[in-house]
Length: 157
Image (cartoon, rainbow, N blue to C red):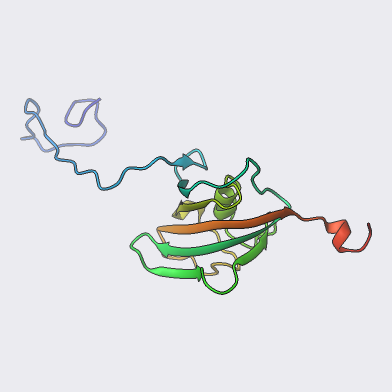
């Protein structure tokens, strides 16, 4: 099915040139290897610097990371890049689920940009207001992670 053909669901003007060729000029602005974390391009990770090791954080790991976020048009909306890095526990809804998904594919020391589109933007203490955002780019550097042990912390072990 092609635009202008009888079986195309989009109607065209009666004088549409069905027999002419249509040429597009395309300029590639950026090209990089990326990982589709969500399997539908809603959460995509671009590695800037590879990390060390093979292990990645998962629930209930405690994570320490440098995190900044900006809108798709480049407006900075969050920065934990100076002072102390951000600390959270995976699975406790302390950061966006989509950010947990991206960080869950990272190795210690890795630096990456996690691109999140609007359908994967959920409220969290990290970013409480998400209305009106179409896309957020999180720059993350995974500093450290360790498996959290609830029983140890509660003094039962």
